[in-house]
Image (cartoon, rainbow, N blue to C red; front, side, top):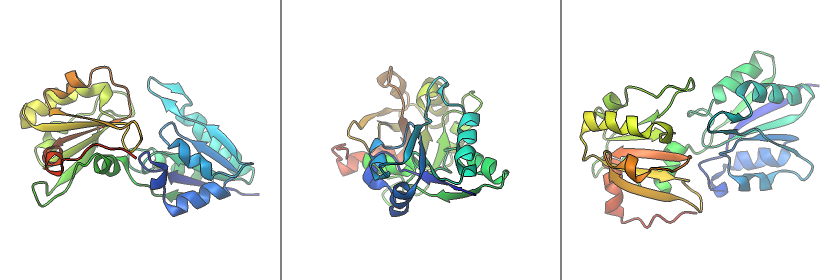
Length: 245
């Protein structure tokens, strides 16, 4: 028998932001391998007899390795199972979905990608931060605050200088270096907003200048997203109460 693996984006945190297709596949799956950042409520769509496997990777390298996750997906698919690999946000936006799909296709295992609402856009929206607006932000870019190999991402200052709003995913482990680079590139008084646990009941927002953000966010743990530039300033125009789902 030949199974199939669906690499499914679960959205940015609120389980009601799952797509209809994602919910259907969860209800049909024999096995669900879910991430730490996948909304816990998403698993309520699973069949009672479905096998649920927590393959989350925690900060600091604890938990499952990517090689172990790849092998686990293949093992169940080769056994003829319908597998859902449930990931937070969108699987192809800094989600390593392409690595997992490539691994499966190289072994002649069917793999389908199911897009989700990316945290890069969904989290700022839940926090009332317009990334693109005719009131002052006509361009935005998305970058990561760290690389898969561990060293901090570079070139963020150059990117920030070319767009009105910059969204940085996974910034906390490198926040001081990011702030220093952006302070030099776009100025210490550039507006910034750090959204932690976006689109969940524990969502919180810190607003400050890019220079001040590291001290105000000291001690915080992931997940978080940093927005720098015009979009962060436009949040004040909405007078958004920062209510979360």
